[in-house]
Length: 223
Ligand code: CA
Image: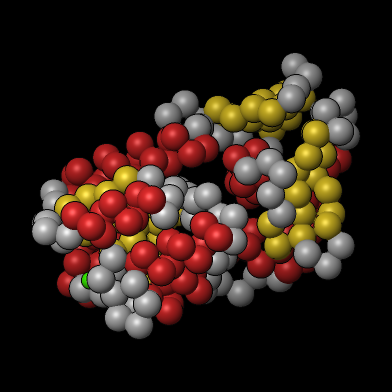
């Protein structure tokens, strides 16, 4: 799971990222509104945790922008105790949940998990399926019309991205960020190789395919 944490209190983001990483949740942190929007627009996150009061751009502005762009990534707002109007505005703008500060970190964790589960399924059982393709993210086994294929970890992670958001176009850069993180130098051709391998397996009877959208990226669709 990969989440984006947009919050300007550095002490809080340090503590939270430490805790979340321990739970095997990858965290990217943005400490102001501009950076937050830039990160959020990559559309590579399972959940976005968004503080409302931020320098440069408020959490509500970020939420409004990404929803207008058609991004339905689950958003958890962090709000001050007395900011009832902000919470109402946030929910109206399409936030999925909110948490009032100060909060217990365990509660934040539980809410993040619940949002991720609601959005993509899969985190509780590790199983995803579309059409006649089933995938188990714990064993990296893909079943196509009942026939089993063992995937490499990276192939599996890439397939998972597509199965969670069919019909959505992912650029090569988004896939690289999601699988390898921001800081790693990975050749774009690596993504192409993994997609090529996945397609070979899907060709053996799957009723879904990974389409190339010219000059943009890839999209999963049913045949
Ligand atoms: Ca703040």
